[in-house]
Amino acid sequence: MAGQEEALDEYTQDGSVDLKGNPVRRSNTGGWRACSFIVVYEVFERMAYYGISSNLILYLTKKLHQGTVTSANHVTNWVGTIWITPILGAYIADAHLGRYWTFVIASVIYISGMSLLTFTVSLPSLRPPSCSQTNMENCKNASTLQLAVFYGALYTLAVGTGGTKPNISTIGADQFDDFNPKEKAHKLSFFNWWFFSIFLGTFFANTVLVWIQDNIGWTLGYGLPTLGLAISIAIFLAGSPFYRHKVPAGSPFTRMAKVIVAAIRKWRVRIPDDPKELYELDLEEYAKKGKFRIDFTPTLRFLTKASVKTGSTNEWMLCSVTQVEETKQMVRMIPIWVATVVPCIMIAQINTLFVKQGATLDRGIGSFKIPSASLAAFVTISMLVSVMLYDRFFVKIMRRWTKNPRGITLLQRMGVGLFMHILIMIIASLTERYRLRVAKEHGLVEHGGQVPLTIFILLPQFVLMGIADAFLDVAKIEFFYDQAPENMKSLGTSYSMTTLGAGNFLSSFLLSTVSHITKKHGHRGWILNNLNASHLDYYYAFFVILNFLNFIFFLIVIKFYVYKAEVSDSIKVLTEELKGMTVKVSNQEESRR
Image 1 (spheres, rainbow, N blue to C red):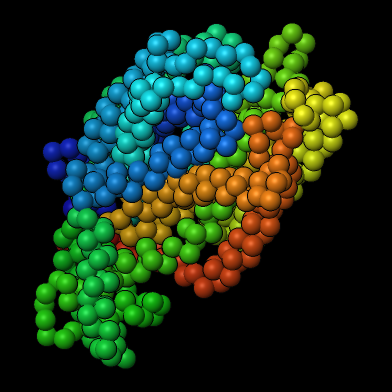
Image 2 (cartoon, rainbow, N blue to C red):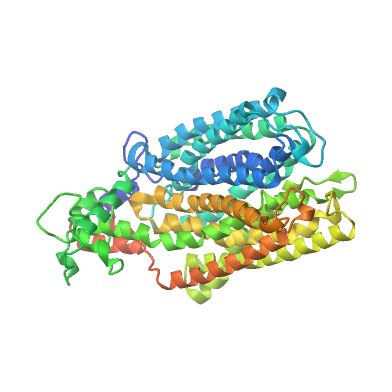
């Protein structure tokens, strides 16, 4: 019997397979060994992405001669697309190709877009003539062909990231077996170090690459991240023999649609008092597939109607309790998703209005000039330091009081980040008011020009943004992954991605709307091409109010949120009910729990 238990323990118990569909052994696959290739990939890939996005607004204004509102909206619309397309990538991965092959194919599209973009910025014929005018309205605009090629490259890149973003972090998390206590403990730190790798690549992009773009040229500035991306893809592929894979479980959208349709068609049906009367598959069916059954929960009772037996076995009329509970889990997260969109509007300002502000200030340190986009490096630095301090000290201290393995709950961690965004925009508004006062004192309002203030007056808002990210962004991606059903992990991860997409699109909408409304009735408006004549301080004060209202909304939402049951608890129940059967959850594993 002991030999049988030892043999069972050699294989992962979460249904992981290799590329050929064979069960994989824990000893030679997965874990931190496999994740090292994935984490290294993320460093290079983030260097590539932020090498483009961090300074994009300056390329649009200086090289393509676009105005402040137009260029900022083009940046946020593109970034919004970057973060929305993961929904499509998650669907393809979960329903058809699996995470690995979806990622590989998307990577080819990604590198194609990066290569075309580098080619575009390298040819003078693909941009308008240089212009030294302070007012870009007097410069020749880019032609339709020039814009088509440039934006075609950008959005090709965006399609590629749609397949890589939702799957790469999920592939990393899949390397840890939730059925194994030791591996599950390692996964608790995975997302922290995942973000560490993200911001390591981001730091290089915001310092070295941005400086190269400003001082040497855009060809080298875009060529290096393109090369970095190619290297990162090669590194990822080199780790293929060590990866664990999950078999595609079908379209999560179809599974959820069946539940919703079945519930609507049976809206008059009474839900039985005893949950055992609801339709559910035998435990053996789940055990054979290395999955676990989800117990009935009393929340979102309308959806429970989908599992009420009425005589029909049509899958659009009758769904199992587990399928219904999976849908409930995804629906329950939607209010949390809404609450995390507003801070993403603030994040969108880092590479748009914050950069434009920096361009109006004294960027010199002796003879060296700091690129205004490089201030985003301080977001990276404060993020890296905060993540390390959080993981090494804060969690250990809080764990003694709360007895929670994470120190505090994921929603509490998100709440701290949301509150910090209120403080960030208060500081940003006050700083901008000070900048405008100095500009007025030196007669720089009407015709623009450099304000005699160091660019480092913007430093507090960048540093605090990084600290807020250490709380909010890390918790957000871990929350949506952790709370998503096992069959919908990629879709769960795409939830966190799409908050950034929605936030950037809303940023475009708010910037255009506020700019239009504040110009009515003969007023000059809050956002102009000349920032010294603008009122970004009012715009940031508006964001303070928006963040405060969003924080209140979040506090209300979390009072009603019910966490998904831990996998370890579900497995314990499963094994207890399947005593005497040969299941993938070994007795050795159970005794550890």
